Amino acid sequence: MKPIQTEDRDIIADIRRLTHRANRNNITRTQAYLAFFQNHSEVHWALLAHLVSRNGGWNMTDLHGEWLPRLMTAAEIKNYFWFLERCNWLIFHDAYAQLLLYEKMKRTGQDLTALLVDLGVSVFMQPIWQSFLHTKDSVRLTRALIINEQQYIEQRVVDKPFAEQQIFFSLAFFTQSILSLNQVIFPYKEHPTDRRLHACGISVHRFPSVTQRIDIGKTLYQLLFDNPVRLQSIYEWARRIPHTGSRADYWPHLFTPRKPASETDGRYLPRFEGKELIAGAPKLYSPQVSSVWPDQEHPPADGTDWYQGENWQTALEARADLPTLDEDQYIRSLRMIEWGVKFVQAFRP
Image 1 (cartoon, helix red, strand yellow):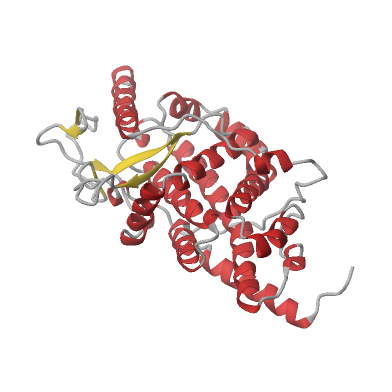
Image 2: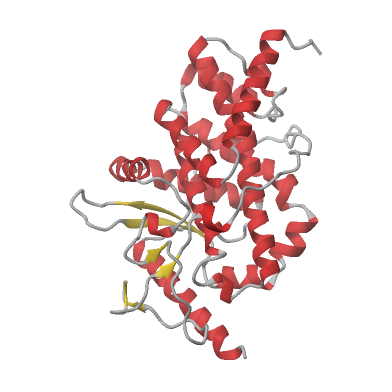
């Protein structure tokens, strides 16, 4: 193997430094993805990653929000947060380094894709980036990054005993699946004069399956980019509203980041009537990430290259059309969660 030249070593060190700095927590990652897309809109994956990372933050804060502490134990909450955080951290660690290398190549006009291996990136991505430098095929690049990042976390998190024993086989995970708690949504305005945001997205099922996660990513990408008007509305909202991790970022009429006074007996009282809260009912508590989760220290991203000569060309070219959800379905899922909390309370002393 040819030794790394001093200039290349400096590029790698700089990329690693910048990636580490932006990988502090869910907030910094989410901001970094959006900032990159604003400068390089041909890399569609960066906007998709920003929005999915926002959802990751909402999932993290749900663990200390209105409902999940009533359905999960403290140990389950801690384990589930670590699972979300580790996946969020690993994907950023791998993908953001690729984005920064592309930024360098775009600025200098050099093909530096040989450095991907030294950055720990799968050999699967090298020809993809080489091709993108000339074709600017945003769709193919996005699908490749979706495949690569889901494979990246497969052996490092999803297929680990911890995830199997403490996450996927837990009663809490089963309960969340039944109640449709695992969702990814995109807020947007259908018309500029709308006072409130609408929502579209997908319910996440069969998360342990890597092919299912890849199809979820592709479906979300199509949902985001197939409709230019909706895409622009989603993007404008993302630029206008900083990510805090609270669901009040998109629906402040339902959610609040301010912790309400405790109910007299500590039990949840029904809030919903149709799409709105019952008159006089307090808003649903949805804290900000920084108020409930401190920054985490992560072990190195271990593992080997997932790509061992398998043919993923078909997956690169194929669409995925999983069922999506609209605002009415999302509201129904919130009401189902409320029903689940009431059910658990009824049988819990």
